[in-house]
Image (cartoon, rainbow, N blue to C red; front, side, top):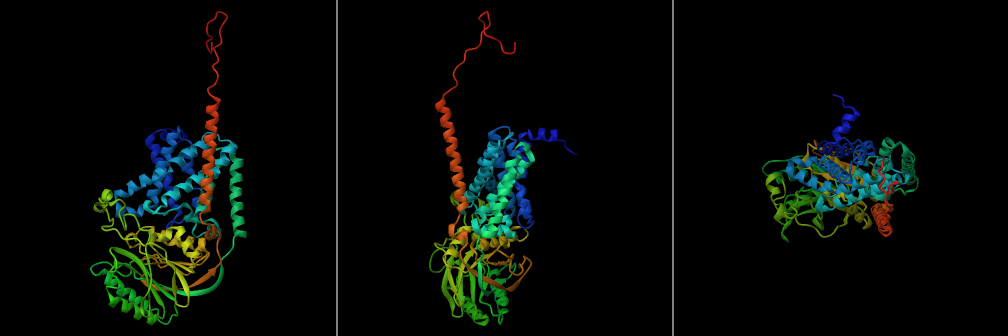
Length: 528
């Protein structure tokens, strides 16, 4: 049945139908991320949401539309968590979706009705700034981390990667929202098309300027990095079987002149100090392939209490002493926030039965002939600041050891692998994303793909010739400056609104005008 425009307006007049429409509109950007990876869709994906919110009958309804759209967005980009967290996924999406309520209110504030040219220009700065604040707040580790930042949808677009080297993923998100706002105005407000077009032209000009003027990484060498991906190994004795499979795959690298071998997250399920037999087997492998091996130990440590996830470097003589303990843990997956209150999550899903322990600092390790590597573990590769700090501390190669084995049949492995392209482009350093079960990937210092992905169906080792580069990108030098700019824009908005409110209060109420009277001294009746 085809619905007319009047039918749609009538349905959107119902709070229930409007809420459903907001949630569906908020979910649309999901298609921009892997696996669909329709990167171009990100430039218009927010338009239906913006058009809906601007038509809200009240400011409160606009805030509700922002909240429900945020719920749809969070649920869509984290849908792969449903098998693990079940109903708790909906609770998290509803709580984090509330972050978009102010964004909804601001959208109506600037774009409702027939906005003036000034309002449209302001919206092109204010709405992207408000969106960036949402991304900043939800990027906190305790709220789930920066998964699904809008700008990360552009991981395979070369001009966007150049922009990432200037302002990180934050700049990409800002510009994408600005483009969506401009397109929404072009569609809905004919009288305001001039500033909307000007906004699109300015965005294109900024992108072109970054393309021409931003410094390119200076490639000055190459290293051969091997990735070992054992694949899915389940059942009794899984840790021992996985180690044996990794050992076999690593042995196949002998004679291939590799500089470093990288295993995935939780590739070793025993503390090497407690299992000298495993440490000796790793040392033997290192001698056979003539390269250090970076493993990841997921086990209770013998020298301190608790379970750690640690990147451990092993050389021909055994563990070298270089070790990085994971600092940012996955909520519910590796620890339960406020376990005394939320511990019940372990009974309805696959939440961590025991909290992992945290490391205290990032580490740059020396490998082989002086190669300096910066390891990260699992979803730490989603945090732009971590790779930036490693690059500034002298890392020439970024590494992420991951294991998305719980989400093999979802879009999560592809999404996770794509993040390394952005981290490489932001820092001007190549990055290796090595996993247990796929997707494993390698990217050069401009974010370009090096070699082929190892998919979720692969159990193999692969060697990559990785270009090294030096120099400092603007993002590595100046950090999250788009976030600070967004804060200044919102602060200016708040100051302006405060000043306007103060002027209204000082002006006082309008003077009372007595009603006009007729010749018979009776009040005039309007309309008579």
